[in-house]
Amino acid sequence: MGKPDRSIIGEEFGRLVVLDYSHSKRRIDRSGTRTYWLCLCTLCGQKRPFDRANLVGGSSTSCGCQFGLRKKVAELADVSQGAVSATLT
Image 1: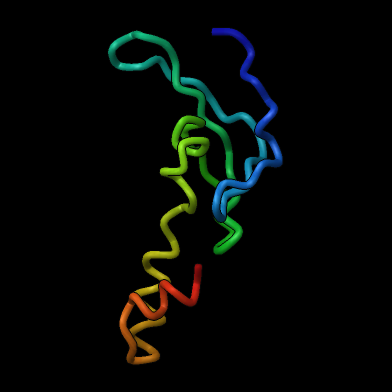
Image 2: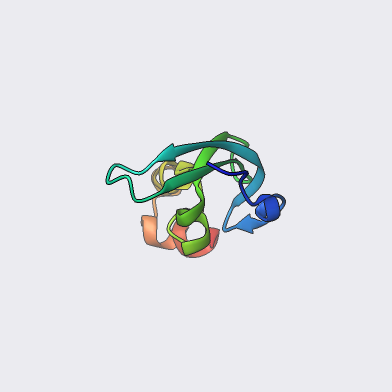
């Protein structure tokens, strides 16, 4: 495995900001490697690694905290989760 392309450090993908390289993992079918990057969720402050392909492809845009947050806010405000979702985006 060569050195990862660090050009995405500082980039924002939805609510995730790439902080640094985390690790690489060989693909199950051995067709190459997956590169994981340590990201900060700007919504809750959690840091965790995400696959580069998911970040760049748009399938990873938060750590998942927004889903729990939507439900909690909707329950407290007695509104639908859709209404909360529209407000948060």
